[in-house]
Image (cartoon, rainbow, N blue to C red; front, side, top):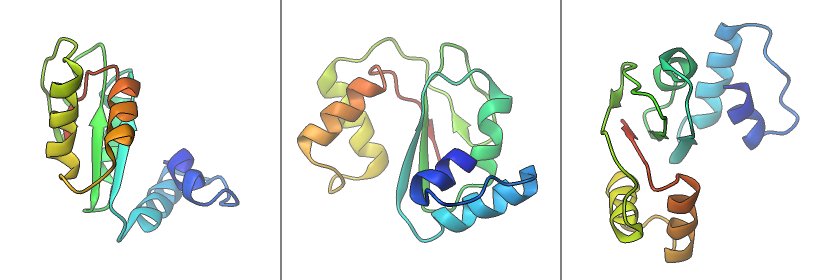
Length: 119
């Protein structure tokens, strides 16, 4: 959560506790339409706080070699998608008007064409 906060505000202090991190995380995301990509997640414990404390306008894609079953995850077991299919899947999550073609293509490649949806 601290890394997300600091990506929006480089001078934000490191929180002293999980509770402080959660408050800062939610405040920085509140009112913003944000897509977080949590790539190659290790396990549920790693992503659960990010899902639990996010703002309502935040969408999260989690990629993992393991099945993540944290609350808020709709797991989808995927092989690598063809580029067009992965782009279509991503557009279904973020909306048709968000992101240009090249931006979507780059994001799809960075996700390894293995997106999972967290709503």
